[in-house]
Amino acid sequence: MRSKIHIIRIIAYLIQLVIVILCYDFFRNHLFLILMVLVIGAPILSIVGAFVLRWGINLELKTPQAEVRRLDTGFLHLVLSNRSIIPSMECEVQVVSRNTFYGAESKTMLELPVRAMGSFNEYIPIDYTMNGMYVFEVTDIRFRDLLGLVSLRKRVDVKAEVTVLPESERSMEFNTSDMSTGMTESEETIKKGHDFSDVSDVREYIPGDKLMSIHWKLSAKKDSLMVKDRVAMSDQQMVIVTELAGRDEDVDQILTLSYGVCKAFMKDQVLVRLMWWSEMAYEFHERQIVNEEDIIEAFQAMYYEKIYKDSEQTRILMRSIKPELKAYVDICMTPEGANAVVVEQD
Image (cartoon, rainbow, N blue to C red; front, side, top):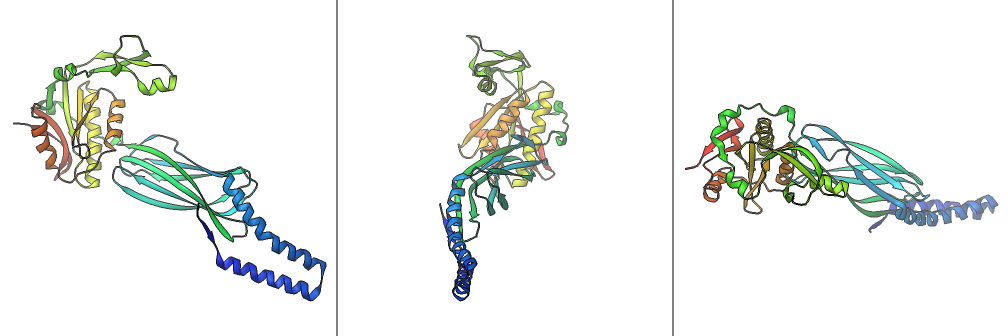
């Protein structure tokens, strides 16, 4: 906890105190005696009150939605509460907004009133201009005592996160038949334990069900294991490689296009094997896509990756690490912009 003394206000207070003392000494009036006692006691009460306020003040950050779409406008809900009887007219809160995927950061300083035994709600509009994981954070609250003589800080360390996904309505329409070269048999992957089927229903777990069929998010909410009932789909899969390479603006276009491609194949009931190069793990990560929930989980995983600069690196690594793949669809930047290119490996 750091505090700050405001010298100018203290000097102004001392000047007022000297004037009151001189007036009392000159007039010898009971009114000035009472006034002098109040002036002497006021700063003590004010500073003690500031420490009481530090105990009672608290902050919450809330986001109405955990997932939004790019180009949407959302709101960050800030709740400044106070359980003490001491108010403050000068309170500052710095909100740090960070897109962890691109490393972009901005700071907003808010001046908010602190109400005695009450709360204040502030709704901050947020324009989600790029895909990624947005993190909003407040580390501390800074406020002054009622006379403004000292400033105190209380550490709060509150966070709120929002996942920004590509906008569905702006995704391109694809002729998936043109990409049939990128198809590969899914038999090998099925042997490794992946389940290529579409979810038809959700039911309670029965001994003997595959662990990979458990709906973990729903199970956590219901405090019992829930299992996805699936129906079989095609025995082929489309291998899609999303390049996380280039400028931030380029990667944002690639992500938006990749989302649209996955949805297009999912609509045609084609199994998708979505892959991307992880610069941090130095290996290819992949997800099997059979429904939109799988796409969202895959993109959430990608948002924790690091963007690399050389786009040619992806194809070189695919040839050396995944030579068994004869062809795949590469979502990458071309002179015309983000594009889906079928790559056939020798």
